[in-house]
Amino acid sequence: MRALVQTAFGGPEAVGVQRVPDPEPGPHDVIVQVAACALNRLDLLQRRGPGLLPGFSLPHIAGMDIAGHVVATGASVTSRAVGDRVVVDPTVGCGSCPYCRAGERGHCASLRVIGGNAPGGYAEFVAVPAGLAHPVPEHVGLDEAATLPTPWSTAWQATYRVGEVGADDCVVIQAAASSVSIAAIQLAKRAGARVVAVASTDEKLATAADLGADLLLRGDAPIDGPIRDFTGGRGADVVLDHVGAATWQRSLDCLRVGGRMVMFGNTTGDEVSFSLASVYHRGLRLLGAGAYAADDFPLMLDAYFSGGLRTVLAAECGLEDLHAGFGLDDSRALVGRVLVRP
Image 1 (cartoon, helix red, strand yellow):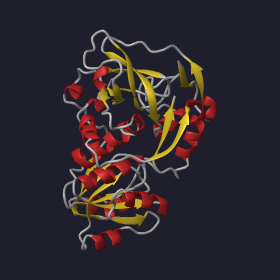
Image 2 (cartoon, rainbow, N blue to C red):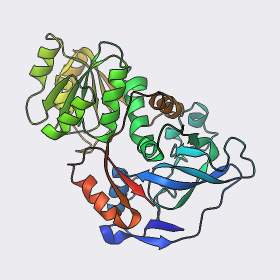
Image 3 (tube, one colour):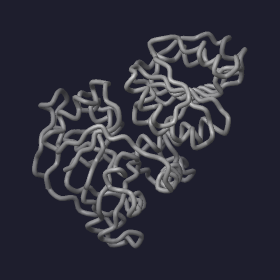
Image 4 (spheres, helix red, strand yellow):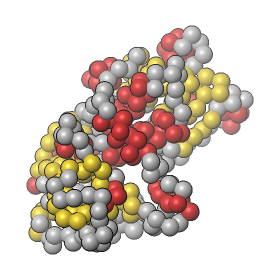
């Protein structure tokens, strides 16, 4: 089969299309013919190096967010059949450790991530555990399904499981036009919340408005005052922040007494300093959302497939053109996802 293979760390020269052996299914696996695979920023970061996920090694086939057709099944598989349309949950736990038994396989010490530290979807075929290949209904295209797995499951966990967003909450979403924020805006609105979208450009804010955001704020201007005006002087109930150091203090400052800060990313830096007193005197809750639970994925799919939610597609490319896709993602001007067709 054809696959985009990373053989070194660095720029575009580190990856190239190669002919590699077709994957063979284990007894509990299915082989998926990839219809589409959406680009993740992790793909770019691990191409540059070093590998960020434990167990990453070269050569490597990236691509975490995969949808396609089942073309072969392992000997013990009864839940899926050849021809099924599926979307793949990329997180594979050991199945037996305390975290896996509790449904928290994202914390498994032996975690494999399809496309992260195991062969992924920038290829014509990929082997995945049958239980992680979820059916896609006929009314949803496989292109659309491929945009869902990582950002929508991450947003589901941050918004609902950790952030506990509910009706009438005021929710501030940083970097509101990123893929995970595009999901979070819609999930928060689905819960009945009022959404404040913060983004760097008017174009990105226009996308947030189209998705239902109630208040639009540029990230290069103060946000605390407008948010307090919007909430009658109270402040936000929840902030969803995957940006990190650049937005940390502003996110804290706009919270109400007893507000919840949900952290699930560090794209602008991993270390911050802040006043402990300003947190504990106001009763703020600092909450990490680091790895979605096993049942977050099917719950997210059920909600999405039921209608009323949508993804944003920015561009499409083939394996040979993926360098251009990486360039789009790295520019930070991207609104929506880049879809790769093997």
